[in-house]
Amino acid sequence: MNTTYKIKTPRVLIVTVLLLQIFSYLQAQTKASPVFKDGEAQIVEAFNDPEKWIRHDLWVETTFDTDGDGKLDRMHVDVTRPYQTETEGLKLPVIYESSPYYAGVAPNVEGLFWYVNHELGETAKPRTQVEVTRKGKRPIISNSQIRTWVPRGYIVVHSSSPGTGLSQGSPTVGGDNESLAPKAVIDWLCGRSKGYTTPDGNETVNAFWSTGKVGMTGTSYNGTIPLAAATTGVEGLKAIIPVAPNTSYYHYYRSNGLVRSPGGYLGEDIDVLYDFIHSGDETKRAYSNKVVRDTEMKNGMDRVTGDYNDFWAGRDYLNDMKPMKAALLMSHGFNDWNVMPEHSYRIYKKATEMGLPTQIYYHQNGHGGPPPITMMNRWFTHYLHGIDNDVENDPKAWIVREHDPKDKPTPYKAYPNPDAQNVKLYLTAGAPKAGSLTTAQNDVRGKETLIDNYNFSGDSLAKSPSSEHRLLYVTPKLTEALHISGTPKVTIKLASSKPAANLSVWLVSLPWNEGKKAKITDNIITRGWADPQNHKSLTKSSPLKPGKFYKVTFDLMPDDQVIPKGQQIGLMIFSSDKDFTLHPKPGTELTIDLNGTTLTLPLVGGKEKFNNALGAKNK
Image (cartoon, helix red, strand yellow):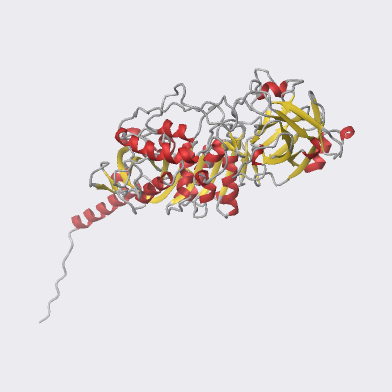
């Protein structure tokens, strides 16, 4: 006999199960998550309480040993993340900044920089070497980026670069380990390398809260490191925003074969920067000093000739870009005379040629200055959160015009401006006062001579109505504004009275404005420097034969500037630049053959626009 039993479920049990399901659903709906509006990550109140942020540090193992202890170096890393990454299983992308500066720098003592008052080609007297007193407390390495990005649904990570702070290894100022160190951190964030709770222990820690998508940013040296990491091709590094990055240490400390200091740091060189940042383990410093500073740098940096060599080529990130995959948003100031604007342009240009997603933001001020937050937000929102905000189709170039605030850049299709055309200008004599710049070519132009004297600053020479220490060539007053966009170039045919001479060129806007309200764009348009001994090759210089003429061709710094109506554009040629070059004894004579000397200006509207701006009588 078959009997079927029908079991009745108590109503109370059904109600309980339904209530639990509803509660679970509501709980899931209230979990914090990133919010996006108009293509940008918004501040989420649940992420915006610093008291609830989780902060901890660890050490990530690298693939190199640069402090000579026979063990792989470990990088000190800190993490700041919303507490929901711990309690709700939330995974978020990472904004990562790395730096050699977090643990302090060397004091600016007398003799730290190289002595610059000596003849060209001579070896300078030894400089003073200093030690850094390390500072900082665990677990916080830095607070940068945190208040901007954590509330918007990111995790922020910092690391001290090799041989600085509590990171092991040695600083190399652009060596391979400074690329491989951030790569190791990114590998850890993506689950491919090991992190440890202590610098020497075996207890591991995992980045379980990371989505494996990383963006990097930073300014100056901190902006160099994102590029360094990107050149390794590391998986997971989706986007970088370098701000005023040093992309080649040769271009930072040399210029077309000339020993040239970065603006504001006369006599600095790569070994000075090494001393300045070397804040790592005191017991390891002697080894690093011997191997890196006193051997590799001493033998490679060459302050005598200034030539480009294998040492400098190994610290030029343009040479390492082939593996790069990260989207690139560059930022720089056109009047940055520390890390000059060529540093960003050369990388942006190459990345664009490689087909990478690129944008460039230029402002008219000096060192530093990130893009507007909305630009950075759109960049990271798309490449790290995967939001389709069409940022890849935004204008490629954003230029802050001379009278505009930095957060109101003007968009252009590209940089340089696609409507810019090279206009070649010729020189006519006028020394010791001013000659002229014209598009008209004349076969008989003559020769003019200047006398080197570093005691006269560049600005004093530019605004002087007459001087034997510079040659100046100017346009007539502009009857309408002219827009320079791109990289001006000069060719100078010269003879020197000595086997070596500095060569400096300024492009200026005259009359010089000395008023209290003068803007940074009012006077200096752009600049450039070169060693005539390198007229044939950047890698090999040869002494000049006194009295013999040589042609030297080189680029000035890239620019995008509107020269207003009523001004004159002036080309100033002189020898030693007081704030940038070595200071040989005054008296060297440079003779310029005007027939072989030209200035090429990239002008929006080209030659026609230039002639129109000079007025009908000057065409």
